[in-house]
Length: 394
Ligand SMILES: *Cc1c(COP(=O)(O)O)cnc(C)c1O
Image (cartoon, rainbow, N blue to C red):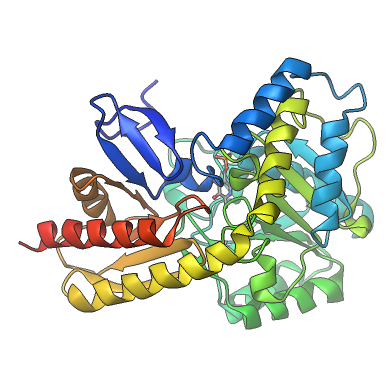
């Protein structure tokens, strides 16, 4: 179906941070399947681990114990603030699980009939009906009304807006089950969260026994130079969701919860494919390689290098560019308003320079390369971006 506006590009091979089209042209890939191909394309460890797994066992139902699932859950629990994990197949699905969990929390722990989940404007939580209802961007709702009820938006990074919505909702008693929020808004324009605002939100949630749930689908698994986005904010959530980077290009999602938020009992929630041996092997391989290759410190160094290079480009092209923002290897280049070009124009022009980029909203060009990207490849990225911007300024 015509669900995608596609670039006229057919990619048929990949290796590391590079992809090749049908004609054999090579592109530096700063999209990486939109922040999913953590280890790059056709990674050796991934190829070996997955082919071994395919030879042994690909899929069994969650009716049985799955050792790969237990192993991945254990790794995630051991390396995060969470105590247990539910596996599914995508970010939207992970958020659906979080939304169900939040509503159960509202019903059982706060005694609310019609629980509300507070989400931020310009957020993105996925395209299924409840996840898109949670998403605070009207353009994703248009034509699909009625939305799922029970979501109310406040302005991201604006504590006054959060507090006024909270007190309006809770005026006549408990009403709010959870706050669902991204540590950094990815799709909404690469907008990092303000630690002070997040700390205050945490305190409000604690005071009222409201669940604080982070959508770490884009920022989780090392992308931001810390394993989890919440480490950047100095605030622990009660639950958080993962997907994109977790499987290194394979479909897997997860909801992670602390013990006090672990409200699901047998029969409450399920997924046919969620947490199957193959998907969990992909996740385990990403986890193992992150550690073995010390990729988080690579993200920190390459992220700094990228940000410095982007800042230099902002100085070189002040008529086109307003600034940069982001964490680690999730960086955005903000276009100058009224410069006559939108982010999509930069993305299109970059294809001619053999560089793949992705917009994050109308005004921001996003870079989310594989976490294995080298110093030299960052320099190539920057010089191709320089050539792209030059081609737009003439
Ligand atoms: C991509 C994304 C989602 C949706 O993930 P899908 O796997 O496409 O369903 C949800 N939340 C955030 C923050 C995302 O970046």
